[in-house]
Length: 267
Image (cartoon, rainbow, N blue to C red; front, top):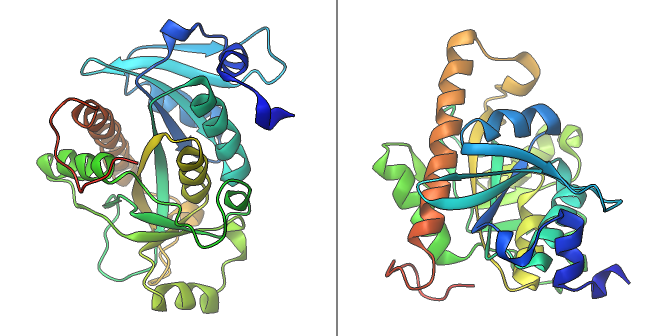
């Protein structure tokens, strides 16, 4: 029944009229969804909180803009929540989705705050099978992903495209599991990207992600568990702001008709 909802239904869930849709939605993967969304909304211009009062779903989000690109920001935790939010925004007709958040490094040679722009995410999230047949990649739109990399590198932020692994069970990762993922060449692990990509791909919406390195799982540097110094927290906050701005600017760069030349096909 919910799968058959149309654009007007999804707009009603969001409390928006057709002409109020933003150019993109930013989905932030974070445990504390309220504080995380509030912090990241501070990186936008003219940000305002919104939540439909007429819908039981009441998906919370911020509306704002940067560099002339209008965006919505919703915070989510894990594949199911990311899929629900992505489905609602894509169903309403938003033209692009960008997953933001953090990843744990599975390869040597990374540093805190490095950015991975995933080419695709291994579908072990538990949700993507509802949207894509087995064997189909949950991948980014090449032009949008390349535009994000270009914007990040223009800021001298280390950024590359790699395959990542999306898991539904963050605390179930053992040393053997991490070693196996590393041997298979995955650059990092997160919880949301495979689900977000799968939903957007199923619904024909352009998609990409930009994830900040937080933990080094190979070297067992667990920043999430042990915390960061005041100086490193300040560094990461500034890096978050830069990533948000780069992602939004890339949405503008890669809009159809802008002349950005990416890696071929759009979707």
